[in-house]
Amino acid sequence: MSSQKYSFRSFFSSVRLTIALLILIALMSVAGTFIPQQESAHEFMSRLTPQVADLLVWLQVFDIFHSYLFRVLMGLLSLNILVCSFNRIAVTRKLINAPAFPLPQGLLEKMEPDRIILADISQSDARLKLEAFLKKRFGKIRTEEKAGTAYFFGERHRFSYLGVYLVHLSILVIILGALVGSFFGFEGYLNLDEGQSAQTVELRGGKGSKPLGFAVRCDRFLVEFYENGAPKTYRSDLSFIQDGRIAKQGAILVNHPMSFEKIRFYQASYGLSSQSRALLSYTRNGVKEKNIAVSPGAVFELAQSKDTAMVLRVEEDMMGMGPAVKLSIASPRGNVQFWVFEKLEEIKKMNPQLLEQMPLFNPGIFEPYVFNLNGMEEKYRTGIQVVSDPGLPIVITGGFLLLAGLLIVFWLSNRRFWIILDQVKGKTRIRIAGKSNGKQWATEREIDLLLFNIRKEIK
Image (tube, rainbow, N blue to C red; front, side, top):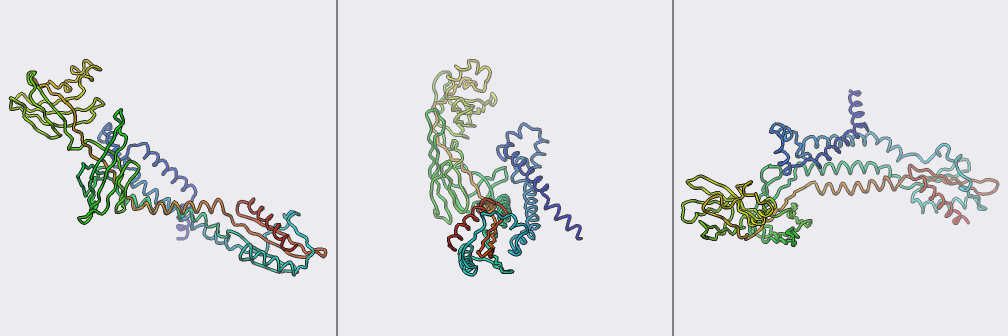
């Protein structure tokens, strides 16, 4: 039983295990950065065979940071840190409770002559002044007297040995926060027209929908463009409705999210609203028949026939060639689908053979009708990213603990000082020695400061 216990502790306290886990976590993080994740992986998967795509989905390659393997690695790293910390407790306790006396071996032999004060003052007076000064300096001192020699001990940052435990604790807290967010958080999106509201969000990765417990309404959506057509800014004015009343209102912009009920709402994208309409017209045998404003799904009859046309799609910028509408016409001659571009003449100038190469781009393919797109009545919808991460406060707390732990580890060290008082050749002799578990230069500087102040005290 004891050998099994030893094997468990020795395995999980191994530095090799720590390095291996960190390498695996780093590799998975790099993979998660370069491999498309969640929705963005759909296009990548379309280039794979169904069998390979199914295998990669089963392995959760396209959702690495929520995968079981990633969570297991984080759990193993946590266990590794806990066992390592537990194994160091006895050594750390010994260092913290190290006795002040007797003096460490060889401490006095290494003492330099400039660390010695010889004064014309009685030993008793020197002791009184020295004890008062050291109490003021260190707060608490330990003393010992032996064979006419008085020993004083003071130290700084005794508990700096615990800094490494604070670092370990902070890493565990950060891992805990990440796991809480992974298990209980969610990320989704909303697409809202002006005046439209929603109480559920579509989860990323095709994981279904999730109720919010309140309604989000888009009161207004504003988008501005540069002269070249690129979006300049876009913002959404939102209302959060709870129990039938508006609980909060505000605006979200890119990089300026808004929070409600511990859920954050980010301005992520925009697109044409279902309320947008295309301004179509058509001629029959060269005679203009009708102007029509249509939206996706609209159906209308063609003049002087029983043929019907359906609007399948309305695109703001189809393949970089400008606004376009896709029509489907049902007639006794059969069904036909084609695109109608607003800037068809400009497109034909760039590629005179376009209509021969791409018959579906011919607006007159259904004779004797020729269709024209005269413009768009554009209305936009807002695309909102919705994120709930209950582990975020835990991660932030872990970040502050990590900062505090690193400051203790790299800036503080346990500095121990011994002051020895005795008499030599009718004079009172004071010797000062010190040692540290790090930053010896700081210990040397403090010894110099002690020498300067002690000389002042016993002058």
